Length: 261
Image (cartoon, rainbow, N blue to C red):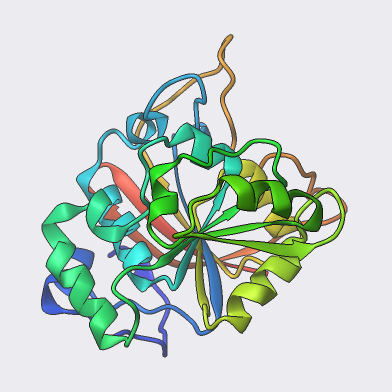
């Protein structure tokens, strides 16, 4: 730990998790928090490359642990349709990303009186969506528009639930978050891509950002490379300020936690 401000929301972590994290850890209630890994020059995704997130992270075991810890703390993991298509084998489960701590992640959820696994919620307006994705076999939610709901219900496995959030052409993210919280999902982890994150930011819905800074430079050339925030302009008219809550180091990786306002 390099820096940390005091917190009053410490969780009852199993010893293994507090040892790996290097101290106490807590999440507010309610809280919508996002997690990203980026290169020094600000690239979070290279869509044309398979497993680009792992490449950007430098295959960091510590980054995978933090991802697993955040998933273990979440009631629901929010995923955009673009991230869904880019992760054809994704499950968004804590033990999948960091198997060595699977038992400790499960114990943490038991201590918090949470279900065995966090719910996965996909956000889609119906245009780009894979109804055969394996994550839909694990009791997922599909948050969509009233217009797209009927077609999605005809193709999505019965193990998952299609929910019409609102009318119109796009999913109202504020209404989607309210719906999730109305179902008891107070800790919402966004693992959507830069566009979903940007939309959440623009609506003032993100409370915290966990950002791993990898000691790599990606550069920019002919292949598309995505920044942390995409699809919205925040400066100069809608700036989002961040308060540094903590900063940790593992080898050459930095792990920053920001509170947003």
